[in-house]
Length: 128
Image (cartoon, rainbow, N blue to C red; front, top):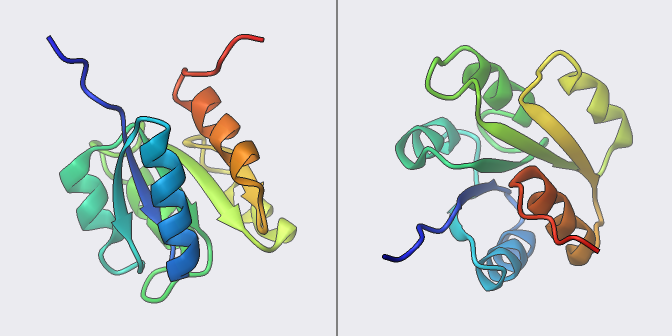
């Protein structure tokens, strides 16, 4: 029996970062779903029911904080783990009151560092 791949939704409006994360996460063995705006994010998250959401803060439509707020108000999504990506360290403060936001990655980031955070959040961290 084949083990199901763990699902990750990536919400990012910069096409090159979206494609890079898709490649890195797919190569790491995850099932990746992409969204390039805040308007469609909650629908995609609700449909996919991912293990992890990688979420940019600045997005067209709804920003990252509005998406996390909506997730926190949904019985189906309140437990979904979120990893925030942002170019602004200060935006970390926006997410303090949301326990599902479990980590933060400042842009520009190294893909190896982001992948390590993803593995830790997914319980897939390699033991040294």
